Image (cartoon, rainbow, N blue to C red):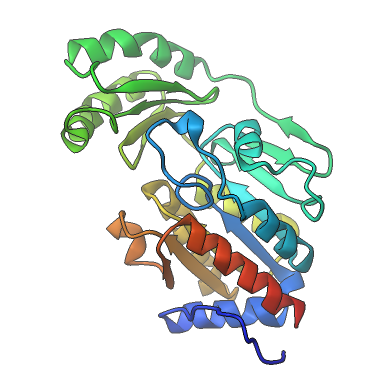
Length: 282
């Protein structure tokens, strides 16, 4: 590979440096996997108003033809992530895959269709209980419920004390979820009730095996990304180079395990664009 006159931040760890070097040496054998909210899109008070960074689709379109695959792995429904990301019909993203609901749903750009499992009855039952449940705990004011199809989430970001509301609800919501055969996935001022058995780590590991990739880059920002980090670390132990990128430093559990810290979605998008340019030289 020739010289790279454009900025490409260096990973802080030797494992991360090896992962980036392997990606740039053989980009066609690499999977680039990304969370959506907080990684490609800024965290906003109303999750329905979240949109990918304005340069995200262009950066991904520049990168995708150079690598084995680009995958967006998100807790959102796959179709919602596609719409909020502006990913449909973008030249260069013909082989983008969006794995929604932590991998339970899948959207392939090449077909433009979503494949999803049947609705989980436990989610419907928990959703029906939530309004009265929040009222009984005195947590109705400032919290709101987000319908997510295969899951349901309670946000505390608008509460007068978001962290106190989050901490107060985490245990009781865990009990509610357990009664209906669900688990609680904590995030940044959000508690999501969803079926067990699938997480971003499972989704990522399965997709890497499907593609036959040798190298994997994963970028995330929240607690729900920890299983994907663990999957990359396991792949490293099997001899697959990997790079762990953290968007922001709001979640220390993630930031402390990252190879490369970036300040937020704008920086992530710039990094992806730089990787695309470097991969073009490979």
